[in-house]
Amino acid sequence: MDKKPEGALKMRNIPTDIYIENGAVKNHGGEIAALGKKAMIVTGRHSSAVNGSLDDVRAVLESQGIGYVIYNDIEENPSVETVYTAATAAVKYGVDMFVAVGGGSPMDASKAISMLAKNGIVCENAEFTESESVVKAEKCELSVSIAKVEELLYTPAKLPFYPIVCVPTTCGTGSEATPYSILTSHIKQTKKSIAHKIFPSLALVDYSYLKTSSYGGMKSTCVDALAHMIESRLNTNANAFSRAYAEEGMKLWASCKGCLEAEERFAHMTDDEFSTFMQASVLAGMAIAYTGTSIPHGLSYTLTYENGVPHGKAVGVFLSGFLKKYGDSTEVEYVVKQLLGFDDLDAFRDYIRTLFGKLDMSEELWKKDRDGILANPAKLKNYPFKLTSDVLDDYVRYYNA
Image 1 (cartoon, one colour):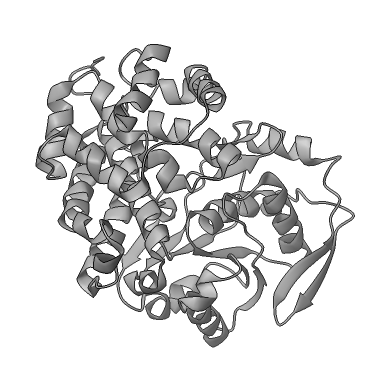
Image 2: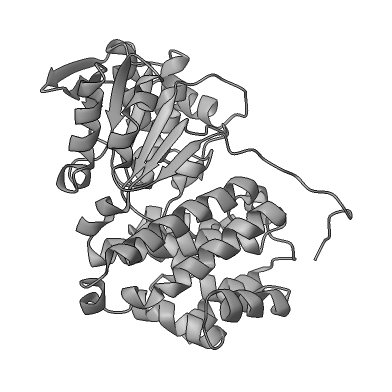
């Protein structure tokens, strides 16, 4: 493994104010109100309405005298087209702050939307309607300009953005503590993080929103958080700060891992267990804010885009192979046994297979995925060993053995 010079330590300040508590939204209304005069609530169609988070945000904005509109057309794995349309709506309705409510999709989307809106990147011919504060696009012809929007999103530059408040309702993405915004590019036919680093101003983390999660959703998001911690801990960019976050998060995660092994056990999760997973997710986000993710995440995007596999599962099926072929067995043993509490790597693999089953991926799609990651310098630079086709093929062979 390549070593950094003795004494070299890169410290990244995470500028987000993060509160982890029951009633976090209600308790920090004044801090939300200080960020702007009119908000766009960025969310999906269903979950935020079911778990109470949307009602909490609306109530606080109204109590603080903050006007708002709701954009609830954020799909899972949000696209460049979606954020462009939402940014156009934000400009039209005079928005100067964003409140992202939901999982990684609304939080990631809000970062891109805030930057596009702040810089006036809009669809000129768009038409919208508003009903009960919910904004809908009636017309927004994107085909001519979307390539230019993608170029802006994926070209590094220091551009301003509006303040963002994140209200996570899942325990996987960690987006409330990171500068990353992962979008689906239909031009590139994959998911990819935009080139801009956009930290939220405020994160309000309340585990009670997890309690309406489905079993499948909880498994996927929890394993996404686990992947963040493993990939950060075993990363070229790892340092004392990222390791501290990742290691503490893995210990917390491991203390509740039995909750995910069967739906009956999940149905009887306690408040403390929900809270523990939520804390682990935040720590995981803080860890990857320093390091970025690595090979399992890079491999996951093709599986999600091409086969519609949920993100956490798409990452999870590559974790055991990543650990098996990692170049430092002592580090792997420390992660698997000491931090995660498994007897050995086979036990870890079997645990993930209990959650998701074997990897079902055509040979043609696997080769496309494998060759794509080998041509991805952004992910390869985070992996401290040489990566080859044979090594990646062993990921799949080991997991499905």
